[in-house]
Image 1 (spheres, one colour):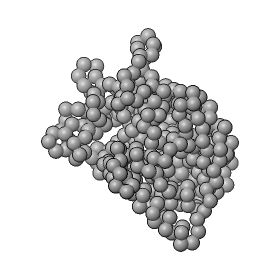
Image 2 (cartoon, rainbow, N blue to C red):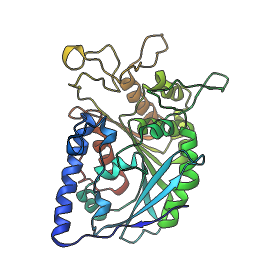
Image 3 (cartoon, one colour):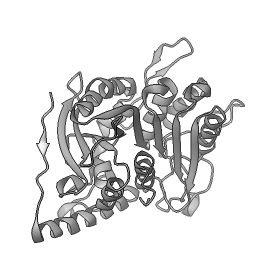
Image 4 (tube, helix red, strand yellow):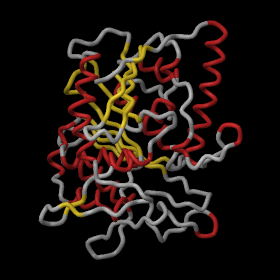
Length: 356
């Protein structure tokens, strides 16, 4: 069951004040992805996932969209989701709206701007479906670690136990995809007339890992995949093994956009999509997340996840997929949530004025 919460508009001076406050919060939240900051009243925030979402575009009156909030639970009752649906006020085209399903829904909604909604509203506005968690902050990191990471199997197809990552269980990506297919999509389709042939998936970091896992295991699940800085290093390159077992011809005709931030880190932490062993930042800071190892290549040497991700796009394109690979030297891993989401909005709406 889902519950709908109506988004009531604010008016007059209060609306302007709310808009200014929300824009300030949005900028601060994006900056916080790259470097955690102090929380409300000086409280120490453990990480960017702890940043409060605050007011979003859904809390303000829009000339172009109306907004709904729904709450759903996982089949086992352990994970609780907030599904926010943005429905264009413009009448649906004959075949129905394009739909963009956005992972990390809380963070995605915090990243969207009023200018984004206006640009899409003046082009070909898609339905936006933000799949988030029913919490006040950007992410439920425990639920996200389970939902966005795939099960790992041996050569005989038997599932291999995945070691806990910082106390977080993984391996639930296929369960999560079933949740999207059986609960989220039917909900979205019941609220707006959606063209089921024009459903797209966007994900960043672990969300990008999930999106590519879906592409390599059920390529026709979506018509387009927009992937920001995918965590190709995860579990010693489990995604890379899926890629090497995948026939790129199965993706023919699909739209695949892979976007990677290449800005070096300066905080001593490691960047997810550069091989360990390279120098990045002061004091020889290593690239990649703490404890991560890139996948082994066929010669037994450690491979460069960024090079492998570029290879994915190249071979998908050679197999007749509409695949692109873009790098952003001005953006780091955290900043790529905005850059990749902006590209997803452009692809879904045709509004080229949307800026990363």
